[in-house]
Image 1 (cartoon, chains in turn green, orange):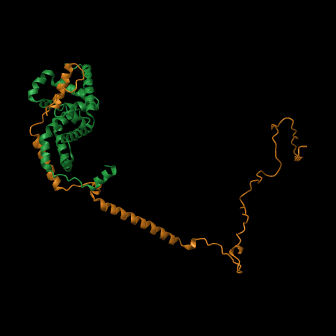
Image 2 (cartoon, each protein chain N blue to C red):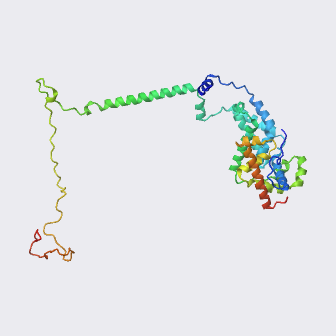
Image 3 (tube, rainbow over the protein chains, first blue to last red):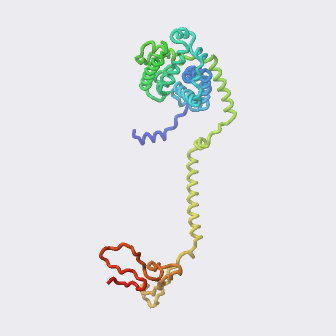
Length: 192
Length: 181
């Protein structure tokens, strides 16, 4: 079919009728399914439980305000991650003075109780804080990819979609980030 | 979906201890668990927001409201506006021309036809107004007007002159002659 015919068909053809969507139920399902993942994404940037939760709530408020678009979204997870990511980055930009909310109680809650003992044997809370501070010194792109890669629920493809780039780019960013982090670790002399 | 390990995808080639340290720190961030009841709090806030949105009709910005207008009336409105503008331009042009009127138009000179059947080529054309000299005003002067006062020109006694040129010495009682010889 020629280009003109294609255009003509698109003009003549009736617009696809959107299926009626029970947005309230859909949003409730989204909350049940993705709130924890979104919390982790937010927490990876804010490192503060209250701020992370607030960002997740703000994310779903935005979803509610744009509920008419819910039917158009192909991948809810990527869409929501992108929203919460933009929210936390925006807030971080505004509150530049606040140094990353290093909240030890948050870290204590951050680890599932089963993992806590195992990780405590690897590094202490202070070491973890110092490593997280080193992560903040990484270049933005590498840091973002590394932090999102830490979120359990996100695959590399989803991280790439959230950051609007390719999977290979994400892989190379993570590789560079880890390499630079290892160098920084050696320089800082953090005991391992 | 199975949760992925932080370190399984990318190993930068650093020593295992370093990787383990980084993994451990990242896991502390990436596997953070929210406080219990997060979903309930979110749903409560959403319900509150829903009530607020339903109570107050959405106040859209002007651009969004314009975008919501149907296409056809907008185009018809544009056409009507263009017609009005064209009418105003034409009407103002015509009224301006009438206000200026024919009295301001310079009338052509009247031809005096001889009346004996000869064409207009032999008609008597009125003479163009003769050009008259412009009288000079009393304060003005010509370009060649003499600016110095009356009397003879004075030459400085030590003025330099080309060698071999004879110049008579200045004398008080004898007027200078026009020719050198």
